[in-house]
Length: 338
Image 1 (tube, rainbow, N blue to C red):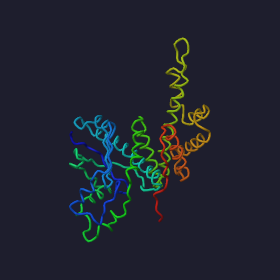
Image 2: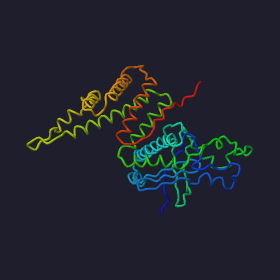
Image 3: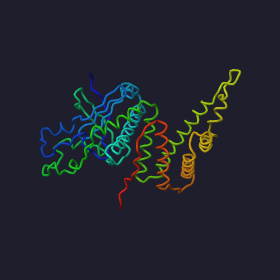
Image 4: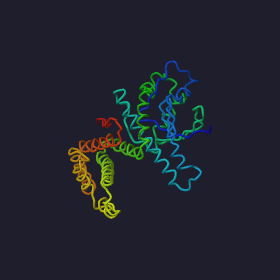
């Protein structure tokens, strides 16, 4: 079996996967092996996920690799699109791992943030799980975590048991990871959901960092997309045959009912009148729409914490309901006092 290439990343806070290394008993010659040891592994036709003891998370998605084979790269757009697809999957999984720690361990471990090209790196693994090579993202904290694998990068005068990069790591057990993987499997199996979760993670990241305007606009994109989807489904459900051999909603009528003149405001009104969204949800969507419009068209408009949180809450509820995917909303802020 040929070597397998993964896209990898470290979360905002590194952790020990399943079991911590005994820092007081670890031997120098074993250090690198223990840090890179695969402690969680899941493989299916859809994706392979491996997580090393030092919390390096590695993902391989065959469908992405086959859609963008390296041998056929003709322009910069091809590798960029491949990276975009992988980053969507990575950010979706990171979101679900973050929420899994809340649901299983009743604790907040990560400071969720968007994983970008600066943070992700490639890893090539052989059949034994040994790395034949990896790229090092020099512009990211990931390089620091990779360097922790090499004992020579640690202060020899400082015992490993008090090394701040190692001693303060929490352990995330495999049952917590399995919880995240079970939801990730559901997301991968439903076309479009990975992209939605990735976009939601971006909105949540901006919210946590206090960028409320950006967070609200990103949430609105998801809300509007959801409404348009629900509206088109409703039109299809009532599109009956009209004798002789005609559709109640032909192509021209469909264009009128879904075109540029059929605004988000009208769509939300119609969805509420058709009992496809409840009044409370409609009201929250409508208020978010008005704020988003002001942000786009009125210079100097700001969004408040409560307005951005409302947009996030509505988006989260719509995702959970439509896709039957339960995950809590971790909307705590990453902002420290100054």
